Length: 89
Image (cartoon, rainbow, N blue to C red):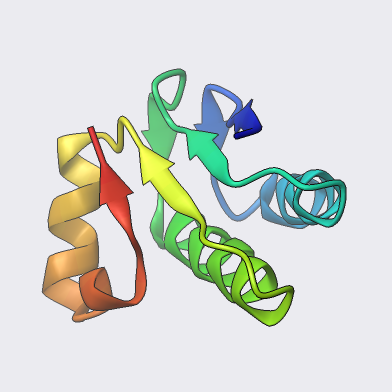
């Protein structure tokens, strides 16, 4: 299993670069993203996580989001997208 980490910030301003970096890691075989470093985020973070999940699924691979901040998990639930992501602690 290969894991990569998010940056400390994942907002609208950094979403494109984060998306591209994660897609590269997933294409190289990453199966998890560790969100422990993530301290500042907005709804763009959810869009990036969902895109990573979809990219892994398209490759036929499982993908897990670990150590998701509780605030971002709550935001996912409010937006109704929590079921699109696979969370692990």
